[in-house]
Image (cartoon, rainbow, N blue to C red; front, side, top):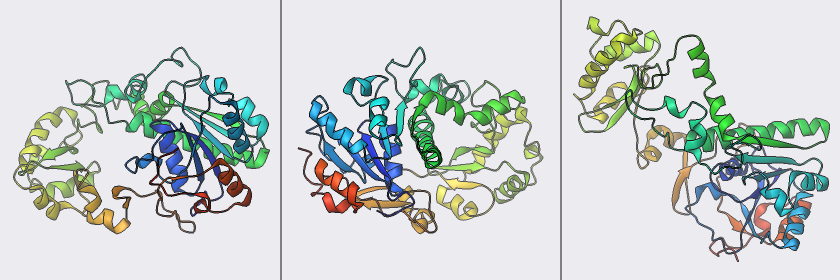
Length: 375
């Protein structure tokens, strides 16, 4: 395995959303992630979040299967689970049991509401978790209802990424203390944390509760998206005066005094209409030829098909193709320990995984073709 996390042994209890995303990130960066699934679960090449894993099919309702997991725990560095509070304890795989087998274990728990609190046992999804953080209220156009920002804020940003940060932070501490610990990652906490700058700006009187009327939420005419003559869109974010001046110059509005009061919010609605008229005069490609690559803070709004073919993304190899599926490449980049191109998930027996972990061998040594369903 290549990458800065090579040698790290991770057990992932299969789930949905943020848990798999966190495990994918660790796997992308070199960790040996063993995913435990229910018997009969097929390997799906379209499930990008499941890439790079060794897969074990275990029926955890059987005591001997639980014992097999605990035998792996004794060799593991990290365990990731995303069930409701108490489920792992009922399975006999709670933190106290696992850490009795492996005192250095970092036990990562991913939930929406957290391990405690009045909502901790309620069902929910990303949209619910970001709703109580304040983040959902802030997204959308002025006068319209809040707009779900896909599941980036709760599941992936406030959930999976902060779980990964928590796990790596705990591993750093374990290297000093020799003791593991539980990481309680809640999407409500994470979504709130991702809103830290906005809470600070609100306290300073620079952000209001009116969505779509602030600096970074589409309220400012110089930080928004605009339709072009061909119906496609561009994004501008010319906040700083020198960047705004260049945008005006390239858009031939430098001599229009109406655009002088850039930071006067009372002027924003009218100037948004004026700038929209300007962008409707050319196609998106024409605007790209005029603005892309300069300091006007400009980019075309690309769809899922276009993004992988953009010259910048091609140059950085931001996307890769695995099993015929175009998907994002591992990130970030490392100078000395670069991550490998992701591999498909593969099936293994628990004995093979235990031997590999004992020997420190590569993942490929204990696998069978990924075209087979998990038996």
